[in-house]
Amino acid sequence: MSENAKLVLFRDRELELFRTTLQEDISNGDYHSALVLCDRMATVFGAVEEAEQLRTKVQQIIHEQHEARIREELNALQKLLDARQWVEAYQDAARLRRLFPDSPMLHSIEQHIADVRSKYRHGLEERFLIAAKREDVEKAMPLLRELDGYLTPDETRRFRDAATSVITLYRDTLGGRFKLAVNEHRWQEVVEFGEEIIRQFPNAKMAEEVQTILETIRVQSEEDKASS
Image (tube, one colour):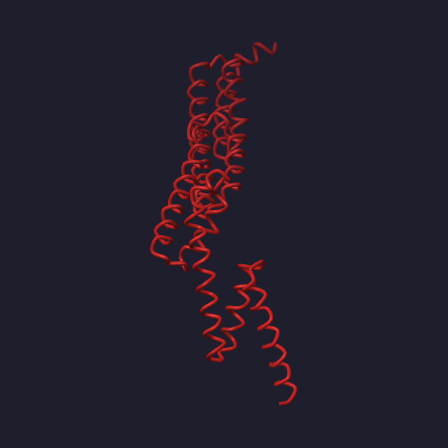
């Protein structure tokens, strides 16, 4: 019996085997193999319509799985945005673009990151200016430090007066707290305020004076420990 005769004779049996194998591939997630079988069903057995229906089914499953994966990835990306990890967010977006270049869900992903970053920066500016206007240096100083990482040199000029006022007031406030703690012999606070002044204003004359006082306190503390 010729091969063609065998193919005709066993066509239904072979086609059913293809259907079973194809369904198993789909169940096992082996979609590439399933698509290959769809092609063979059409070309070898002439079951073009059925093969096309199965191919559409497989492609729909792949599409749905890709969408589910992308949604999971976008949730992870949102966590980076919530943590204000902008560089990592852009890197993750580039990775997703490479993995899913044709996905419409990712078409504006970079712009979304830029919009979120810009909105957060404008919020920082607003909160800083409000705190500066109220002379609330405890809020203004950390906001100023964070804002500094977002501004270009040209943009920094817009905040120069407010920043100078906040920094000066913060320095004077720390200096006042330091002196009061010294006068009241609250040595632990003296050290804390003094170290903060030195850390924040290392080039100021106040820092030199504070350093001298702290050294005297430390020497006296060591002498007290030795004598006891």
